[in-house]
Length: 250
Length: 260
Image 1 (tube, rainbow over the protein chains, first blue to last red):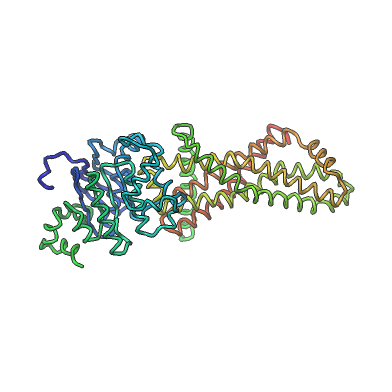
Image 2: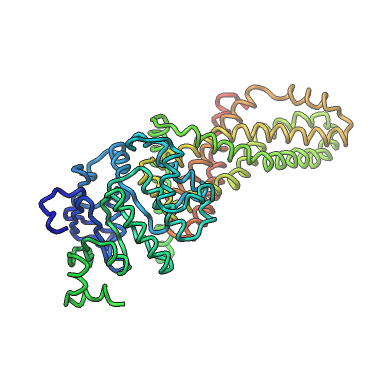
């Protein structure tokens, strides 16, 4: 994937800085995501991974730096333009963030209410909802409430919701956290199959070394708010640097 | 010195919160008239807040009218003025007691409910999920709820007042042998336009205050389950305080325009 550096990235962060009072979380973070690539970001808890990914979708305003998605700088965008661009980005939250007052069907219909025209060859809301649920193997759960689903099922429904507008970029915020090892493997396999089926580009925030090994094309280690190291899983896991090794020790 | 600093800091944060709430209200007025409009969600909220409060408001109103009449009867009888009962009760309930008591009941049921619901949505990142999916959560969650409370509260208060008068009429019928027809004739003779209009306008402001503070507290909820509890609790405290302030202002304004 490093050979693709001449290709224009679909997403680029330049010198991203973000502080909360005296806590300087991001101190000039840089990132490029290329088409069809799975980029894994690893870092310790509190290292700013979630802040960085929330800056990417405009949930948190950075103090400085540029965020370019599909050649558009999101830091200077108006609300309407940003809402439109967000339909091209799927986001899987750490806690799934399903709307708990709505059924699975209504959760999936929600993004379609305003943006169904963004889907090529749209064949109706019912079709899109069923297709998205079949992709994650949960067609039978369509009329259940989120509270009736297990943690793994909730994560799958959240993935279906993130995918329903057929986004080209997907961001996973700790997709396997809080799941048992078997369910975590199923989720990782699901992420791979989605990537292969829709040729999406993904940013995956994770602590899970197994997840990183299976899914990553490239990795960035985020330490003290900056890019500490970058490379493939093999390159980083074989590094002699103690700080890098600490990420890969069980 | 520490006590002084603590008082100063609490006063500062109180006024900062009032300022934030004013900005929140400003955002509401900026966005309420601009498309897209969430009519379906507005109707759902009207149903949740209006229809689902009917029983509570009805029971409260009925007991209010009943108790008020029972308690007032002996005093009026001492002066041989029990024939004034219908006028006194109707004026008191329609002008003041009905709107304030029912608004306080709704502050507990609706205001705390909004605070807790939006607070838990904030804590579990559901509001962020909504924003990321290209929907403006302020329009979908906040504007619909504030408009629904503003529309529903006057209707609930009118209905609560009517049921309170029914409760009063039942007491008068049982204790004083006053027929329902005579009682309600006296009620309509006593009530004037200048009694109904200010009370209805006041209840619109009550509804707005309940929606605004409930939404503000929930939407800006701090992280964690403690934050949800605090959002719900402080919503009720702020709303109750605000209701009395609005009531106080309303009485002065009514006095200027209608010479009560």
